[in-house]
Image (cartoon, rainbow, N blue to C red; front, side):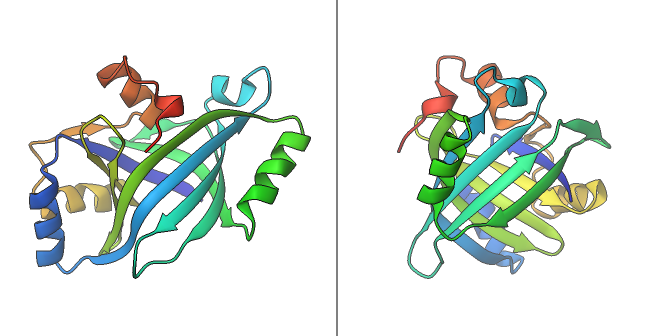
Amino acid sequence: MQEIEVKIIGIDVERLIARLEELGAEPIFSGVVRCLHFDFPDKSLRKSGRLMRLRRWEAEEGFKDKFEICTKGPKEIVEGCKSREELETYVEDADKFEALMNRLGFETTLNNDKHRRSYVLGGAHIDIDAYPGVPVYMEIEAMTSHIVDETIEELELQACERSTETANEMFKRLYPEVDFDNLKI
C-alpha cells in the first residue's frame, strides 16, 4: 500500500479539534504511542530511507490498545505530498516481536513516545501528535494527494506550514537540540 501524507506545522490544536468536531470527524484513537524502530547494526535501513517499526498504542478510555508493526520504503514527493510504500499489520504480543527482532540481529535505533489523537474525516486519516517539549503538529494521510489538499482546505489550514519531511527530518530542521530518537513521555 502507498502512504500519501503531509505534516501540518503551526496548528492551533483547540481550533483544529473544534473544526474536526464541527465537520463530524470520527475520533478513532487517543492515547500514548510508544514507538521503536529497528535496524541492522550498519544502519542500512535508515541510510536507504526505509524503516521497520513497532508501535505500542496505549489507549485512553473509550479506545483500544493495539500493537502494530510496519515497514516503509524510501519516500518520494508526489504532487506536494510525501509518498512511501507502507506495509503494516498488528501483532498480539509486542514484547515477543521485539525479542524476535533482537534475536535476528536488529538493533533499536529509535525509542520515543508521543500523545496522539486520531480522526477520520471523509477519505482522510488525521493524526494530531504531541511529543514532549515541542509544538504539536498534525499529519493528514489519504489515498490521493487531491484528498489531502481538500482536507487542508476543509480544516482551514492553508496558512499553516505544509511539510513532506519525515518526523526525523522535521525534528532535525526545527528542533536540532532535541534527541528525536529518544523522546520519552
